[in-house]
Length: 177
Image 1: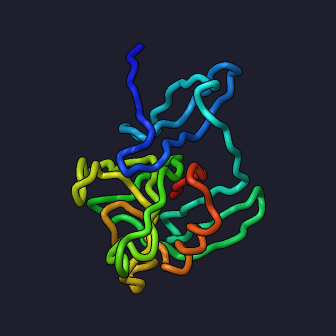
Image 2: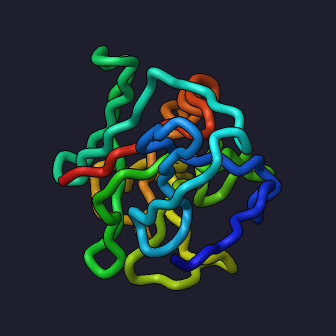
């Protein structure tokens, strides 16, 4: 079995988080923030601090909608923009890896950007980074409800600000449709 080290903090200076898929006592199977999307690995339970959240985010690409759930209860919904045909938002199970507050007015990333554990299936690099997906605000609210991004999910700045104040790093994100 090949071994690979993943360091903490991550490349953006954020404490490394994983999404636990299975708990086998001494070992935890976790979803990894690497290519290919959906990669899993095993870590020693003693080497990490566990935290729980009852929140999850679901993105419905076909309906251009997001829903934040607290358990089974929807607590916030809204419209999103997703990837264009040539740079689609890939379906899958992800988690928030970091939260960034862009400087100034935020530009194309809006008020906040949550990095996701997944990557573009098309772009191996983007804007100097590794083609990592994100859920972020926007400086073009008229694009919400359309295919307008390079694979990221864009929300209104009000919605992403609410998420930044209420959702933790590590929150699960499911992209469907």
